[in-house]
Image (cartoon, rainbow, N blue to C red):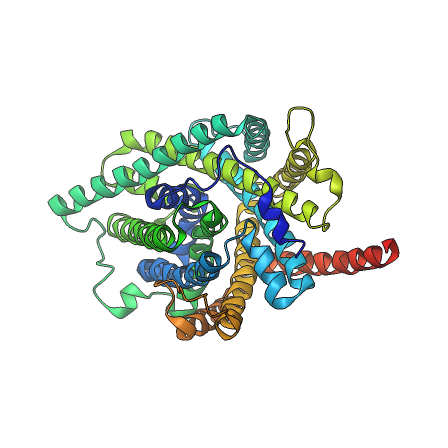
Length: 455
C-alpha cells in the first residue's frame, strides 16, 4: 500500500534503538503537560474530591486504547501506524481523516500548551498579557525545532526529567506534610459520599474530559513502536511501566491536592500544585514548581511540534498533502513542513489576543474530542483486527481486556461525550472539532476528484 512505504523514511538519526526504559521515559515525558498541571484545576472544580477517581478511570480507558494500538503495531510494525491501520481496515477515507485529525489536533495542543505557558509566566510578571507570552513562546518553540535531531533530543530529555522531578517533589513534600499534620482542609473530603461526590455523577463525568486530555500524549509512544529493538518484549513492558507510573503520579497528586486545598477554592488561573504548596507552608517552592511546569508546557510543545511535522511528511508521502511538504532543502531539512506547521501554530495561538486565557479551555476540550475520535477509530480497528488477523499475528497486549475492554472503553467515551456537552466551554470545543472533521471530509472529496482527473 502507498501509506506503508512511508515507513522507510528515516526521520531520526538512528532507527530501532529504543528499549523498555527509553520508550517508557519517552511516554511519561510526552504525556505530562499543561493538561495536568493547569487543566486539572478545572477537573477539581467540577468533580470535587472524586477527581481522584476521574483520573483513575481515564487512565484505565487510555490503557485499553494503548493496548489496542500496540497489539496491532507489534504484529504489523510500520511508521505512522494510526493512519496506516485506519486505511487498511476502514478504507482510504478513514486513513485520510485520521492523518489530518492527528495533525490538526497537534496544532490545537501546541496552542493550549502555549496559552498555559503564558498563564504560568504571569506568576512572575502579572502585567504581561497571556497572548503576548504565548505568541513569543511559540516562536521560540518553532526556532528550537529548527535544530538538528541530536540537539533537539537533548533539549527534550532535559525538560522531561525536570517536569517529572517537579511532580515527584510535590508528591513527597505533600506526603510529609500530611503524615505530620493530617488532612489540612477543615471538612474531611472523604467523610461521606456527598462530600466525595459533591456535584453528582454529571460533575464527575464532566471532569473526565480534562482528565482524558491529560493522557492524550500516548500517541507519542504508539508512533514510536516501529523503532523498538524487541517489540514483543519491550513494548508491553514499556507501556505497562509508563501507564502505571502516570496513573500513580496523577492519582497521588490529586489526592494530595484534595487533602491540602479546599477544592471549592481552587483557582483555575494557576496550577493547583502551586496552590497546594502555598497551603502547606512551602510558598518558597511555588516559584520553583511554577518554573518547572512552565518548562513542562514548553517541552510538550516541542515534542508535539516535531510530531506534527512527521505527520505532515507522512501525509505528503501518501499523496494526501502537497508533495512540496515532503521535500528537503540542501541541508536535508524539511523546511516547508516545518514552516507550515509554524505558521498554523501561530494562527491558533493568535486567537489568544481575542480570547485571552479562555482559549485554553476551548483548545483542550477540542483536543479531547479529537482524542475521542481517534481512540474510537483505534478501538474499532482493534475489534476488526481480532476478526481478521493472520495466523502468525498471535500477540495481544496484556493491557487490553480483549473485546470486553474495547467495548467498555467505547461505552465510556460515549458517556463522556454526552455529559461533557452540558458544559458551555466544552460545547464550543465539540463544535470546533466537529467543524474541522467536516472540513477534512470535504477536503477528502476534493482530493479524490483531483486524483481522478490526474489519471
